[in-house]
Length: 444
Ligand SMILES: *Cc1c(COP(=O)(O)O)cnc(C)c1O
Image (cartoon, rainbow, N blue to C red):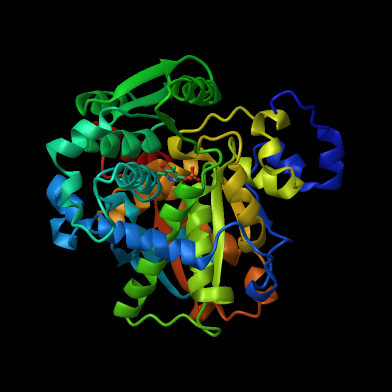
């Protein structure tokens, strides 16, 4: 796959926006393949799959209450709140010389228990799915039993016969490492050596084996996949092509539907929902978009956000090459401070679905991430990591385009939702550094 030659000049002349993308300018791309829900062709997963994924989370709730006492408050359900953040609108209206109307909310996955990021949805789900399958096949449990049993010496001993591996720039490794170690698996996280030190330290403290690789992250993931699968009882969580990760993320949509109802926020034809999702390999934003489209149909509009140095899903979708193309093929270096989004090649599984469902993608420069992170912190006291802050620009990005007009939407009636994908585990020292960097840029 890495060896295929991409005719860059052919694609640039066919899709002129690529000229700006390869110059690392920030862009806004509207997806010409977006379909009305009635016209979407049959997809490789169904609503029933999503409902089954939700049921699995419920079966494991008693396990979480025991194994992660911080989930007691939510009865063992791993979920984050939504918070109104209209107080940042004034500063961002000034910053972008554009007034955004409507209501602005933050989906606070930065507060998710266990992993402190959106990976607590997909990553944890995939490990639970695997653990359940092993236990059922070994006749240790039935789906109607109390899953507290998964937090027991007997189960830990059983799972210690199996190994799980994952390649990760950081957050996926944290979620897979933490949940796998808790269940008793042997777990190895393959990271590029430039991954954040505190993430490696935290994993080692939890009993996870961390293996580091020089060079691009793609080297780590390739070696990890090979090494894990060489093992007869090895299971590799493959971010580049995973249906289970995708389904784990999709359940967020069912939860969000209830949260909006609780706040009396109506979503219908005249009151659409606009959602802005930070995007790396495309799994988490893809799964959530899939779920939201099942729940709200054409009344939800989903936008992905990528760094200008790592627009992998954008290039994949725009050229139609999906996972067959990397940002490096177009001369981009994949270097960004948004480590959750530093992915050079899109997910095969997720991208083929997102192609029909997303409204567009925008990209932004790293400096802007820090400014946004600082504005949010100053106005609301909420800290989110740089990757997550990319979502905050969404409403202004859309307002600067003709999207609302084209779709005959009255901007006053829109509910905007930025998906804050991570932050809770970032150490105080790094938080301070990010904040001060944004402050200096805003004052500069
Ligand atoms: C992983 C991650 C994302 C993007 O998820 P993908 O599935 O890689 O697209 C966004 N934000 C944060 C903080 C992440 O860790």
